[in-house]
Length: 348
Length: 205
Ligand code: SF4
Ligand code: SF4
Image (cartoon, rainbow over all chains, first blue to last red; front, side, top):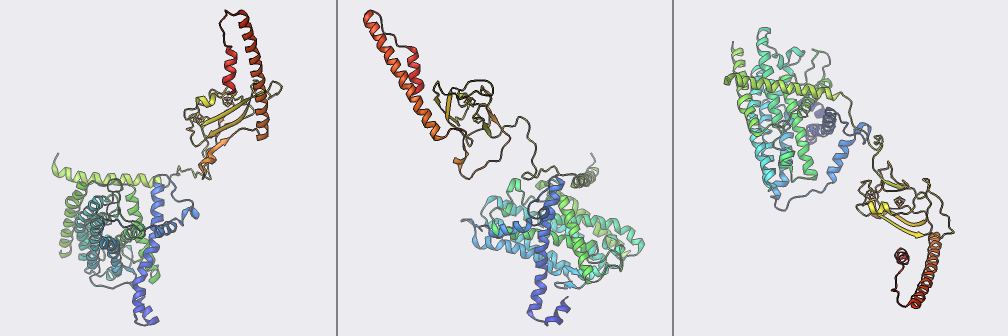
């Protein structure tokens, strides 16, 4: 992709801008689809219909919603800290968008082929916490502050088990470069990391249950990191009225919303790359190639997004103490034990 | 309980119950939605549903009972006595109509749909319909006038009623004069006002 653009328009600034903007286009389109899918799934799980009026089965509703949000008055509370208040949504979005730079969207498209890709993603997505804290603090509203503090506590707690889960995969693959990690998993479903990657058969049998546990640990903690039910206590409509987003309206609110969905796809995509082969086709050498690889990547990512939505509309919200219990007393020890077990298997 | 067993039991239960929950929501994903697409599909209302009122003026005898029953006073009725030579016809329940009803307004914006006005009506002409979509941009459009009389009819009815009233008053005066004469003639008898005359006075006010 990059090579293609380089031959097309030369190594100019425009080239880089296009490469940088492509994921943004993807996020915008994906957010429209994801909002629609989420609303429809939520409604049907509750035996309702959701959008039915705008277009066929309401397919145009997300666009209508977006247009509405664009027109809304953008209010800033008089007592708010203006600079931080305005800056916060953009920082949150930058934090989640920056992660897309290192995501391998296909065998020939990656924003930046970093050799510490996954490490970079873990680090840069912590910026989201800063943005959320800024939003909560500058709103000058106790509910927002509560929400922000909860979000910070939650995201920081859950970064530990998720980092451990990532570490386990990195130990097997021996690389932090997501493009290489995906390439290592090509050649059929049996090479996916969740099935032990390219290890020998004997080792695989021991590794598979460990990888399954690591996947669950990663998936649960990633769900907590994107602040979605059952881990949505920072937003908790019923107690905190959307937490740090309470005072936001119009475009800024839309950006928070967009960041949430972007984040959701980012963590699902990382789970895809780490455990389900990234852009690798499940059928050995069939259906490979640059376009197919992009298709597989997006399809797998969307599938995990759907599972996330499914969980969200199934489980009730956890209490704060339960949330901390899950992170510190369940996920972290399990992840640690798994990493230890993997280390022993690898040196054996 | 053994703390270790409790710890793992907890995790097991957590995962198991989440799975059960997901199973349930998955099943519901494919069950038929119960939503009724309201403006295009309408639910059949129960037989005795209370919605907008309708008054069949052909049957109304102007007895004012519905207005008196209304707890929010949203029915406004005015009546004019009919002349003896006018035949206003019969109601479908076989009652003779004796009063013109020039004004029969229901302010449906005030109406609380209690249905209390329906029961006392002797001719069953005020009743609930199944119409419930009648929102308006101007509140005054919600005052429904049911009277079927034209302004000209009202005018003639008024004139006739006035004439009748005058005739009655003249009669009364004559009667009073006669009574007075009789009283003067008797001299000792106390003057007694006629109860019928008093009633007449009130009605024609
Ligand atoms: S339904 Fe009730 S409130 Fe409405 S007009 Fe009749 S008595 Fe009055
Ligand atoms: S109770 Fe019936 S007849 Fe009497 S005034 Fe009301 S609607 Fe007319």
